[in-house]
Image (cartoon, rainbow, N blue to C red; front, top):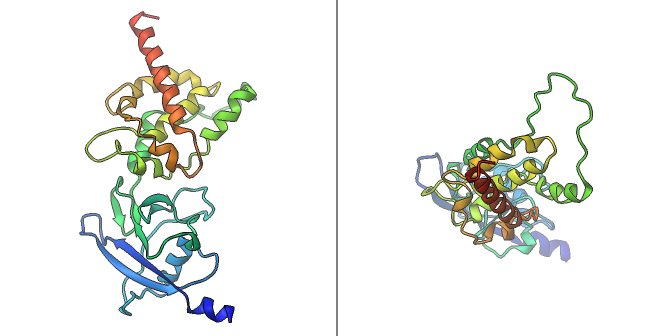
Length: 254
C-alpha cells in the first residue's frame, strides 16, 4: 500500500524559461512522478528524460547547470521558491509545492536556468584573488600561517563562487558596479596569506575605487543566504577597517 501511495504522488514544478539571452521569458508547468529523497536536480533530470508539460504537450528539455551534486562546485545556483540557493541540496520533501524555479536575476540569462556569472569572475580578477607565484622554479616550503589565522581563513576559502550572495544583495544589480560580498571576502582571505599579503595594498586600492567596498549597504542578506555559512559581513567589516587604515597611511605619506 505504501509503495502504491508513493507511486501515485506527483511533484509540480513551475519553471521560468528563456530560449536565448535576448528572448522574452515565459513559464511552463511540469508534473512528474514523486520519488523519496528526490532533490531539485533529480526533478530536472526527470523532466529532461521526458520533456512533457503538465498538459501532456511536448516541449524542449529544460537547460540548467550542475556538476558535483554535493554543494561544492556552486554551478546549480538558481532561485527556488523565491530564495537563491543550490538545487542539489534543495530536497523536494522540504519544499512547498508547486515548486517555482527561476534563474538568478543578478546575472544575464544564457538559456532557461543557465546564467552567465562573468560579472563575478571579473570581480575576482579585479582584486587579484590568487597567490602570485609563477611556478617556474621550486620555492621550497612557504611560510607557516598561525593556527588562529588559518582557522578563520579556511572558512573564507569555502567560497564556491556560486553567486547566491550577489543574488541576495540588493546593492548588486545592473544599475551599479558594486563588486559584491564574495570578492571582498576573498580579498580578506588572500591578504591574510603570508605570501598573498605582498599584494595587500593593491587589493585594497581596488576596493577603494568606484564600485568597491563603499557600495555595501549593510543589508546582511549575503551572510544569511550563503550556502557555506561564510562570515561575509565579518569580512566586509574587516576590509572596511583595512581600507580606512590604508587611506590614512597614504594621507600621512607612510
